[in-house]
Image (cartoon, rainbow, N blue to C red; front, side, top):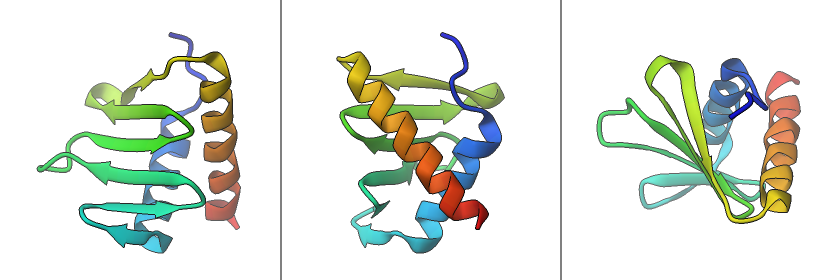
Length: 87
């Protein structure tokens, strides 16, 4: 899969959600994206718009989705949250 988004952006958005998101069980959410991690924090997840992103070993990620439009909407939301994190 072509890298549509870089590792720094993923981590920045994850941290933004962790810092500013609303707690719901073991997850936090903000602006339609949910962030959580596995039990040891080694793998992090971003979820929203019908997409699940798994990010972990060797700064690689995998996107699970059914329709290309879901991927596009998810990536746009990640970019938007990244602009908020940078401001």
